[in-house]
Image 1: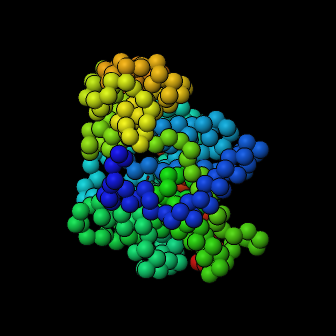
Image 2: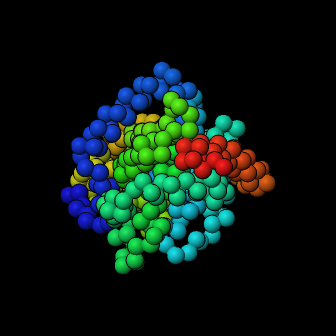
Image 3: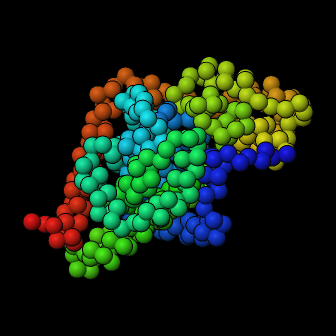
Length: 370
Ligand code: TRP
């Protein structure tokens, strides 16, 4: 039986109604075709909260996809969303270390720092300033209706809603709109935020007008729903650092093997790919499949009645093979911290140039260009 979960996280993943989800899926398929026709039409923005280290859930779920988009010729902007760290928690944690680790993981995973703009919220004042006019374009009840924010509040178990938790989707709209990104690869939980960003772009144009005659100040961004796989943690639950069920990109091959030895399987020695009835075993097969390119059913057949031990050995080998070059690059990059901070500094500079130009247009549209 598939576990029936009513946790806040589960609600989060179902936070968009099925009609708009179906529309987003259909539109994503059209966009994939348009990218192959002319990748220069698109600017992608993606964001991560620096709350931990990148793990395989992130890698298979989105990072790999971003690297592929870049390889297809799409310009990519990569935000390290440091102001979003404090939406649902009190402390900022070891932020500097986590930001550095993200930059390292991005580059090690294949993001090209010469082509991608890697930047942080806190270094781009003009981006943050957009929050002010944007807040005038949304109502309090709209903010309270955002299903992702609601689910995030529930997940904090009793914490009061902060002003930032309530309004961060508006700030996230600024992330997307300031750099004129028109494509945002996201999971389903982020669809409400993207809808909010589109609304803000439209309302800004209606209420405050345009800086230059024919073109609205902001583009209308669209979601690119990732076709990437959703892997679970090693215990069959959502992969998350706090559960200790992850494999992080930065782990060693030995640590990976150790974690996998403890992974949950079941009593049936015959390995089959059956995500509904055997979620843990199937998740391990899925990871081996994503890492090796072989179909999960084929891998299951090859293991046959070898049981959980043979399955874990197989997954360990596939993951460590896939991660070996990433980890080697990572180790090299770690030796050169100055270079990593330099990548961020250059990204922040570029983000500031673009944000300042956008804010100038906003000032013109709002008659504040004194
Ligand atoms: N909210 C996103 C998350 O929690 C991170 C994020 C911040 C983001 N700004 C963004 C995602 C802009 C897409 C676009 O994963």
